[in-house]
Length: 108
Length: 113
Image (cartoon, rainbow over the protein chains, first blue to last red):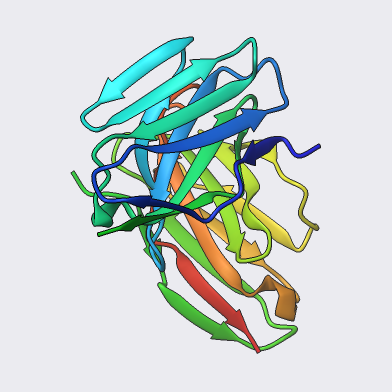
């Protein structure tokens, strides 16, 4: 079992829709969770961090964490073509482990 | 506030050579982590340094090594390069490393021919 898994893509959503990105992790003692966005040919850019169960909202982005289910998600409301990128879930226990990423395409 | 700076941006090396990559973290950040990114393997953790000490290490052969200086700048070295070492090498800095957000540099694109 991989340490961090993400729903396989590519994920395509129409402009203005909600994009839902999911991530599961295997190490129960993980304490910190991060979502990064990576455009093609660029380095990852931090979008959100979440440390406690529940929801955390920042603009059009909402991160959700459920430690009991070992599940993290990222919702993007009112998706824009500029949101088209690969989204990486990262989980920290003693080191930061990244998931394989989900490619999102927002169709105008 | 300047971001994470990695040099050089691009490198072409021959098999068997060695290479040194440099990373200057955000001012005040004391933790630097290194990652290798390839299309097939995604982002793989190499090692993390904090206050000049290696705090964690990933599952890479001993040809991959690193160090951190007293000003928190870090270098990684790859000896006896192999074709499979061709990748984007990223470093990320964070203030303390534990439960804090990490910010990436632009990366060094290494091509081994």
